Length: 242
Ligand code: G3P
Ligand code: MG
Image 1 (tube, rainbow, N blue to C red):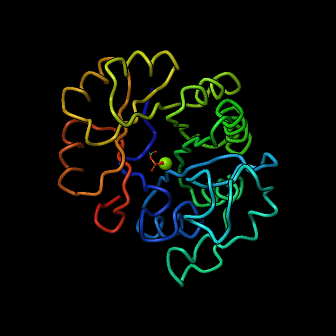
Image 2: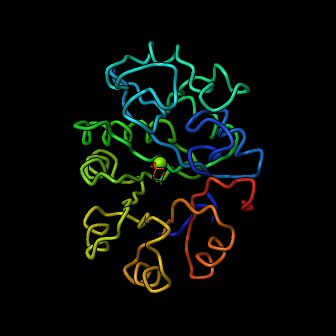
């Protein structure tokens, strides 16, 4: 696959400088010149796709309980910014649709991480893929869909095979290449600490691109890029030039 994505991708919007997975974070990342954004998407209780990392609300909102236990109308009233800092008080949990519209309007790209709530892997993978296809229809560059869940990626492939996929790994298992290829992925999406020059070269030989997360040290970023890394996900949008 040709690789239309930029080398640098902002993690959860703008890393740690703004509340993760909000439009405020994406706007801030964009103000640093970032052209592509990684964010986490899951299903609310009523099937609306929202940006949220955790399965529960406590860490990043003033709500409580499971995301899957709330309809979007309830989630929309929560404050997803105050936990970060007062300047972001009242920042809402955005839908995938709202974020897609902003990105498209501003010519920015997306790495949608499918982050299913436990037990909703296939349902979430299929829902994200169908919504991404609908929202990005006719766009110059479609989002890349990534997930730690092979079940979610398989479901995404079933409903929207044309959308590019990447399989995420924490530890890199021996059969990482076979598992990426079995899902028809275009990229290996690996924890940066597991990547070496030979691993990147072997991915490329297998026809896979390589994405690394989450690289916050500029020297490490430079080394990985020197080894041929295709894209790098970072929190350090203020330290690593886009
Ligand atoms: O998509 C890469 C990275 O975001 C995976 O880890 O926990 O930050 O979603 P996490
Ligand atoms: Mg993520």
